Image (cartoon, rainbow, N blue to C red; front, side):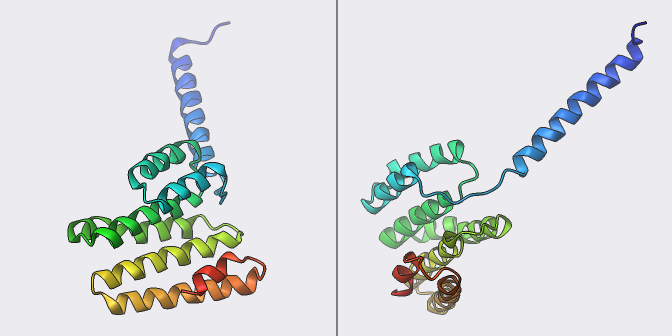
Length: 171
């Protein structure tokens, strides 16, 4: 016997909704990582050479090819840091200030047992502390330096052989 028409449509609809649900869950359950692979390091090198536009294009590509790699957040923050620190543009500052909290929130939602996790958070705070000093927000800068320091000290205790902590602690 064949399935009646009135029954076939709900089955197809249910199947479609189930597959859509399963796909959505798989996207959200993809485990976040922190991987400073060759592409990430190349982008970082562009940033340190102040090739901001080229680095920004590379970041856009990386976000598509490595959507769960939290190292990209670090690169994005470097873009904001260099643009704001160099230009001291009030309009850009107002436009980009919300990025700091959004990045920290994304990290908080995607906790990873990795020495780079708190290091990235501390770096974001240090970048913005330096930016805040340029925009004469010294109390805010001081608070962020202290928060970064606490993260780095905690990271140093948890990962004593992670030498990257030393770079930021020396600031």
